[in-house]
Every structure is written in structure tokens, then in C-alpha cells.
Length: 145
Image 1 (cartoon, rainbow, N blue to C red):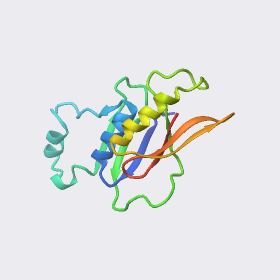
Image 2: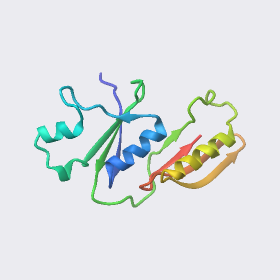
Image 3: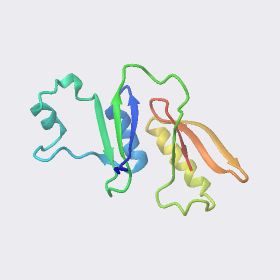
Image 4: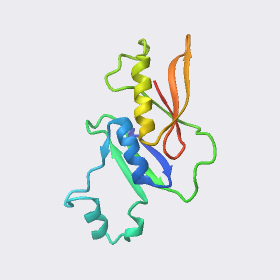
């Protein structure tokens, strides 16, 4: 049974949103297919009209451990709360359940806000933990933990 997993986001601007999420996750743009110097060369060779080059965009974990993230263009903007969201830890953070470095999480939230995210609310609940809810540049909720 194939158990590969891909996360897919609907987006108004797949490349821009993908670039944001690559920064958040420490990912990179998916490399162009073999035989092509870059995606522009591949899309041009395949006869894809230039106005469709941003119909999709993929980012990948450079270590190959995490799932591929694919962003696909849709005509409508986000209109309701996410049914699924990502909880993103800090690079190099301790094991799950360890006491969080609140200052580091706040600093990361501020860094992501500089890239277009919006900080929504900070939670610090005994027994539940500490996290900050943010919106990505297109309004998708996610949490820094």
C-alpha cells in the first residue's frame, strides 16, 4: 500500500504562498524534472501557456523526510475557517511536551508576520500548552508551538 502523503493548499497565488510556506517549514521549491534546467524550461517545453505557469507550485523537504506540499490555484479566496490546520514547531525545539521557549515562539511569529502572516492570538493554557495562532498571507490558520 502506498502511504506517501502530500498536503495541498488552495491558493490565489500558488508561488507566493508556496514561498511563504517554504520559509515556515524550511522547505525548498521542488526541483525541476530531469533534463530541464528549471521549471520555466520544462513548462515552456511542454507547451504550457505562460499565463498558466502559476497554476501550481510545489515545495519539498530538502531532507526528504516531510511530505510534499502542493499549492494549486483556485479562483475564489478563502471564505471560512480551516477544517485542518498545521501546527509548526520551531527548528531545533525540544521534544514534544517539553516546556516551550515562549520568547522564541513569539520571535518566530514576529518574523513570519514580517513575511505576510497575521498573528491572531497567543494561548498559554495549563494542561494544554502554549501556542500562537497565525494566518498565512491568504488567511489559512496555523499554529506555532
